[in-house]
Image 1 (cartoon, helix red, strand yellow):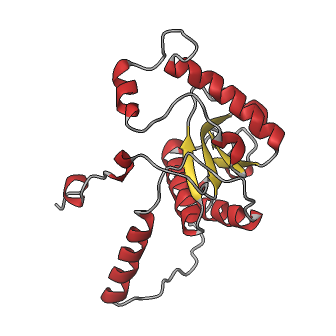
Image 2: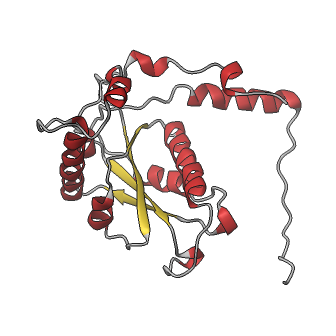
Length: 228
């Protein structure tokens, strides 16, 4: 096997104080990110979305195959089609049509304090829906033939970088995962070897937007980290 061609890699060497300050500033900024369900219809520059996807596309991935595609939906007709299909699945999830809900009683109880239901107006109101697809096959050439690796992990990291960049640009975000999501492949015209992972809703929060108080409750550092 031939040796891979190396290229130089460097980063600016910060002082300890500078590194700590930057890390704390980023942590403080990201702590302000909330899942917003009330969006303004105000336009957002396409350049922000392009920059956020570019950042997401720089995420590490298995074998550097970059197994993702981001379908940006701005068309009112396509946003309505997504909302209609998503809400049909959500009504089944919550049992809003009078049928027995797909979700367990325990799951519905866990969601109660967040105020979620089958109505998803944000899917039409927000200026952009970024539908994230995981490419099970395709490789870097997206030909549908090459096997991809660590797809879920790779796409998950990319989604985190997408959300962080959108937040840094001053936009509100929401991750929506209707189940099943196969309809998104049809609406977005994507191939059968791609799996819809989530819809990232992006835009400015409505003037009267609120978030549930429970969203402010986060586990402390001592509970989410251990030092070995």
